[in-house]
Image (cartoon, rainbow, N blue to C red; front, side, top):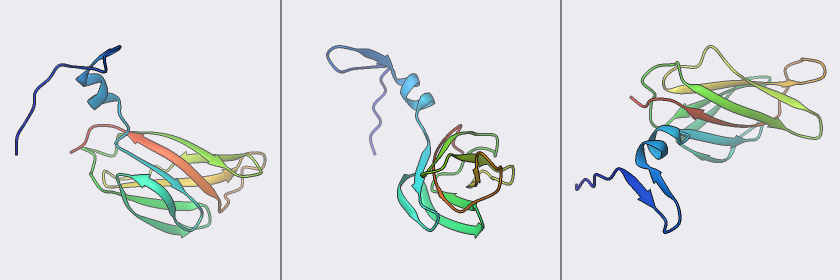
Length: 118
C-alpha cells in the first residue's frame, strides 16, 4: 500500500489543512429507527436493549470511551437522545426520551461520534 503525505487540500477555491479533516470528521454516525439502522457510517450492527435503549457496535474502535456524541431524536413529538455512560470504546449506546415528559421511549435517533480512533 502507498502513502501520500500532504499538509493541505485545495478544491481550486478553498484550502484546508488535512489535520482539520482528519481531526474534525465524525468517526461514525447513524440514522436509526427503533428497530433497525436506516443508514450509517462506521457502525457494524444495532442492538435493541429494551425500551428506548440502543447499542451501536462501532466498526473502528475508539482509543477509550471518552469520545463525544452529537445526537438528535426525531418524530411527531419532540425527542431527546442521551449518550449512555455504559458506552465503551467499541459500542455507542443511546437512550431516547420524550422531551416533554422525560419518559424513555422507543423511537428513532440520529447521532454522530467524534474522538480518537484506537
